Length: 318
Image 1 (cartoon, rainbow, N blue to C red):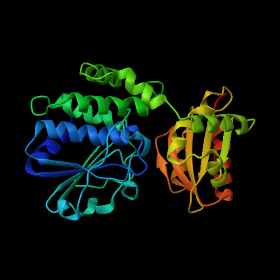
Image 2 (cartoon, one colour):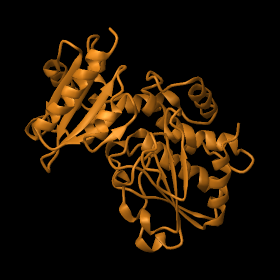
Image 3 (cartoon, rainbow, N blue to C red):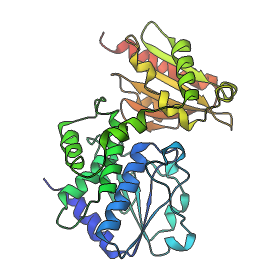
């Protein structure tokens, strides 16, 4: 069945000469894959249009794509599309408000339905899957390049953990198979996403050795600024270690709490079963049922999150 908003989105895209695509702050592979994959698809389909990617530096994900230089003047009369971003505070580059029209394309719960057109599919594994499906459903009007396919594939495997996470569906696999028909090397992308620096590997050892695990299966590790400096690791690089506690058999839900320069803690929260995004929402965050993020102002708030996790874990069928 064709998603009717695909038609709406494509009709709107055709009306604008300049299209600026945003994604969320602190990008992950799906944020960049959906943003840059959509940009490459539109560049190939509409070579006469100006397609720009807005947002802060992508850090060690530069092998996927880099951002464009976008001026305030570029937003005048432009169409703005935001991918993979559930709520407006998380949009990278606040100038998204300067555009003429705004489209939201996302796969997180639609707690903030911003934009003139809202396309949210919470059943999709990733926003990159939605963009790829957009192409597949509109093949008569859109063109997909090898580079766009590479980016969308990277976004899908990033958010599915190489197809290991529960969000992976038969539709995910069908779309991935379609993308693999294009000229790029899938295992090369997997290797790039899986590779970590030696300093992150050392931090991984610390996390596994110092993870506190309660009797109900709640895991917790706090990475202070001093510890991060000791290992020479940045907050962005901690994305590589988020899944580690889940490899331990008696860990059911867990949080990795990373102290920020401003003094608060970024909370990376994960679960093997209990729904945790409602807990994240109570702490200036949100996300997927089993993978969320939040913010804690101090250790007291971290302990509030862990206490909530304990309740969820104790109620979960053993």
